[in-house]
Image (tube, rainbow, N blue to C red):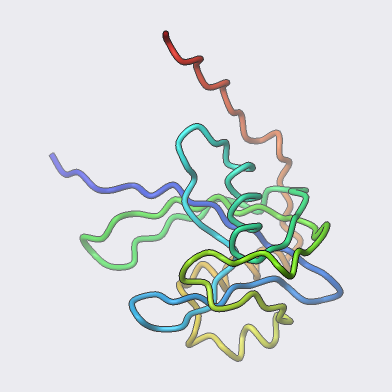
Length: 155
């Protein structure tokens, strides 16, 4: 029987005035570009995780407005498999004094064209794919996700 490590991750596509919100972060010592993204934590639903990761990585508060899709990625044979749920969000406020997560170099707003010119810097192929799906008009309802309530702690 084969086993693998599953990574449950979230990301957001946030647009404002024709620009999309990204982070420049370090991965294996290299600067790369990604959507605001990260791992869901225990006890956290996917939308909460997407909101939290966006805030921690960019200092932007957002409102999750839609579901873009699910993306599955294995960087190389034998690596863990990343299950990314990507949401669409609208910016609601920025705190310029908030410290960004460790490893985040900066938050930046890029046009889709500017992002395409920097393809060599993308953290993974999912960065461009999520933008392509967003630009194509893909929008899924948030109620496509059912989150069963977490059980109460037993005492």
